Length: 105
Image (cartoon, rainbow, N blue to C red; front, side, top):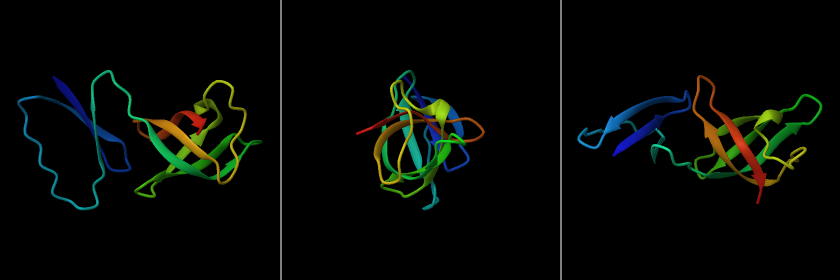
């Protein structure tokens, strides 16, 4: 089994085999473990969203990290987001961690 580890706000990630032992010693590190090919669903609240610009921020629960959301990251059928909306989303772990598949809950 292969496990992908995404660490911190920068979106750095690595893939480890099941025989690899990983130790995280920093209290400020937020780690998300997923088996390869699966999707982790996060929840949060929309902090702000500008429909004209097509950009905003979601505050991820429970760690209160702000995640960038663009209009291209909205799920089919979602036209815009409004401050205070509760949403579910995935995170695109690239150079800039961004929300994708954002839908209201």
